[in-house]
Image (cartoon, rainbow, N blue to C red; front, side, top):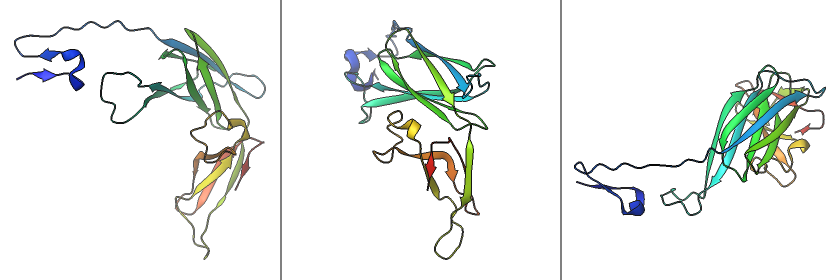
Length: 193
């Protein structure tokens, strides 16, 4: 029996009596060098860094199951100097970077990657905390209710997280617990409802 590559790519046929050896030349990709700082400009060590880059599938010779982009990403931590490095990015694209650390409101940046090395500085603002309870019309707690946060500093940065054109975002930690309680870290310019 023979097995064809996905979609018969290049008409390659692999059989048990005819091994196929392929060589690939991989581009080293771009790198993003970043620093996470607080409102005083001091480094934020140990910040969780989440990033995502969407890669277009235009012209790819394999089945992408109806998708037109592939999102790739990972999570890492900033070092003692607040620095982080992300390698293997696709040049000529953009990367969405989010940072999180206890005591700070999440930071976010969209970075254009147009050469071998791009740089970003993410500002993490001191957090204020809004907490409360969500109840139904009879006063019973609502578990799993989502609290929406308006982050003016994120408008135009994380367009996929936006619920409206006005820049309303879901906070990652804003679902109520079993008692209807929520606690959300917000920067000073945010509003909550």
